[in-house]
Image (cartoon, rainbow, N blue to C red; front, top):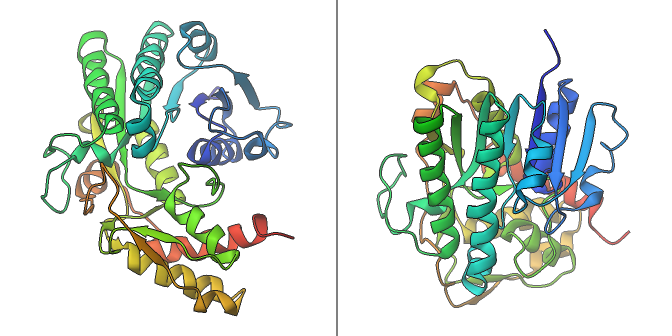
Length: 326
């Protein structure tokens, strides 16, 4: 069996770099396409000397870059995107250019290169104003942000490319992914690494709202498992559809803060005394999010190994070792 080649777009980012590392360890050939707009070279520092790894600096908004990256590729794991609801509210045009036009470029390039399967990062933001819990794949509401619109458009395009051109696609609706290599810096940093950094500096993290909004926080290793299952499944019913990618449990932001303080205090007891601050709710935020993972369990054999608490313990250890001031 010849070595399979995987293209991971956004491979220098948080999720992408974890996928690169995992599949290199599994002896795949891995190509990373990234323009380093939000990804980081330090995420790839342990990979660049691997003979099975190739880095292509390019932008998914450039069709030529996409065409170059997919040559000889068996599978595409498309992670490249501009995340963040607030970023999309502040700059909807760039978010649309990357997330919609860039996505379409990748679909066209993959189709033309006869890629076997195109697995892409979808988003729980697609559920929009639907109040039903848990979130089930075929029941969505209206999007609440430009970002959510772009991720829903991705699903529509993927479905059309499946039906019209026969390109196998599978979308993974990520629910609040966290873990090692997630960037704590910048205006649009994800909540968990941002809070961890603030606690390590004995600063009070600021919670949007009263802290009772809830999320299905999902550890990175569960997401890696879903990408591998989606890439390799031979179940016809699993192809050309979308799956929730989550643990299937929810915790409030107040719960999150309590766990972070507990786990971090093992390294620095002073953190236990740092209190959170509260502010206004954030525009475009969904109040509650909880995934049904029954479809993924049934069609893909998904079996998430890490609850939020178990994932947080590992993530906190990684942040303590890698991000605190030495």
